[in-house]
Amino acid sequence: MIVRDFNEIVKNERDRVVNDAQWSSVRMLLADDGMGFSFHITFLEPGSEHTFEYKNHFESVYCMQGKGSITDLATGETHEIKPGVMYALDKHDRHVLRAEEELVMACCFNPPVTGTEVHREDGSYAAADEAVEA
Image (cartoon, rainbow, N blue to C red; front, side):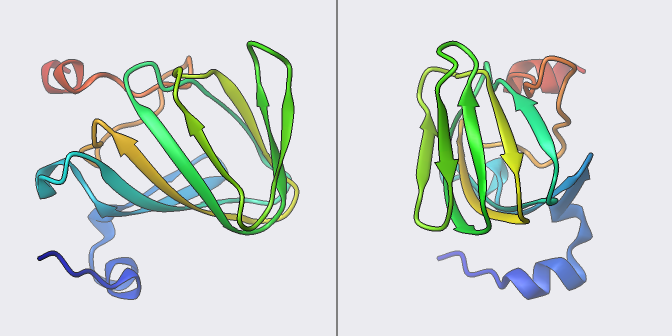
């Protein structure tokens, strides 16, 4: 059984907290936990806009707090993001995520991330085998 306290991770396990341009993510589960997915609590700053395309990962996201929108760049369709809304990037969808208010999101990645990934210029993370070679 794995039991982790978000507050303890933030206070004592800074290696599990990842910060990037206008967002931060607390990595509750990572690849080395052996669960087959990773689980994160991610915070997006109000007024921020992010373009992502996880070419090597599937992601599902549940909004716990805040208000924003997500636009599917393939279709141009925009959806409201608010508490209770979940979206899943089942086609490695290139998208723009906008935070009108601070967004607090629970996120799952498959395959799981290791915790050392950084977004590449195209908004993706490297595949696990690419990350090992880098």
